[in-house]
Amino acid sequence: MSEKDRLEMEKRHGPLGSGATHLTVEGKAYDLYDLLKMLGLDYDDVRPIDAQRLDAEGLFAIRYFDLEERMVVAHEFDAAFGYVREQRVHIAEWMGEEAYQNFGWGAWCPVNPDSFGL
Image (cartoon, helix red, strand yellow):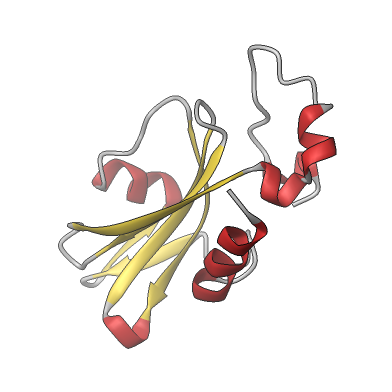
């Protein structure tokens, strides 16, 4: 992983947390947890961050934190909730390597991205 990965994600999806908390897809409004459920991503170790409509392409995206892998994921999908592509960037890219190494992860991970200064 490199800072380049983080910059590429932010270029396409904006700064982490800058997206919406609700999206309207095919005339129906969904909150972040509803979107995860529709995409089959509603696992105990997944925490939603934000979502957006990618207007130029007619696609949508939800970003979430994968607690098990410690990755920020941008999952892109179409209006039928079909998978298009995803990008994964390790959380250390936002925290910084020193903060990540000294965080004291233990057997848990924080649920709120604000808890590590994102």
